[in-house]
Image (cartoon, rainbow, N blue to C red; front, side, top):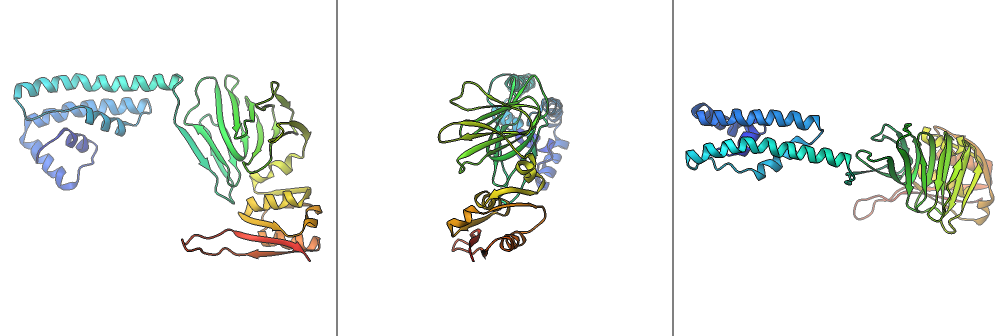
Length: 339
């Protein structure tokens, strides 16, 4: 078995197949030179592993990079071999320390960090924890993008959909939520809800506690809210309007509830569609005039539709999913019509 430097790395990391490991250990017993080389690299490997772990650097990936850059031509002239080994012993720690220092400078500087993108599945509510410890609840079909760690003097995330933010207080770093229409919601530590689905004509920011500032692209002055207020941004005309709202109606979704207070059918079918991942169609224009007040917690879609039928002269028909030629399934469809 011809011993390469990579074999030593794999042996130290216990990545050698069983047969290759036996052959390597047999060569190790018969070769004092290989034993010495193993101990030298073991010392460097252990030192660099501890250093990498301390700096939270991916050790395995960096060893792979180093192994491609370092070439031990082991079986050349013995004099060259010893010289080369001595140089390698000095070179490897230098490269490791240089890489770690670069990574540390990168974390403290302005170099862009890797972005994380998470999407909540349709029909589900997901909870995540951001790098700063802030809690975020993502509503059905919503996407959030954020860096692996926050740098400089701000914490910035991008949202498409609906999310409830419980921001960890940090007066030195403002927390900013950017939406696809250019609306920005910012705070230092507070709780608020942002409704920003791409297909909707408006974006809503609702303040639960603390304070937030809401700024549009075309607005020089931010709108400052107090708890219980909501700002509505019209995508078409870029207007910002502030109103008082029922906080339970706007934020109960994160706890698995749906609360309607004199809600129109347009809002009802919109929220039911996202909650249960179904397509809902109204066959008659008159249906848009109906309003409802109700609170739903554990009720199924069938139970909610039955309650709607009992409270108004309408009927609901559910069309179950069908399998297509590519073995995928369509979404369930609900058709609501007048009786």
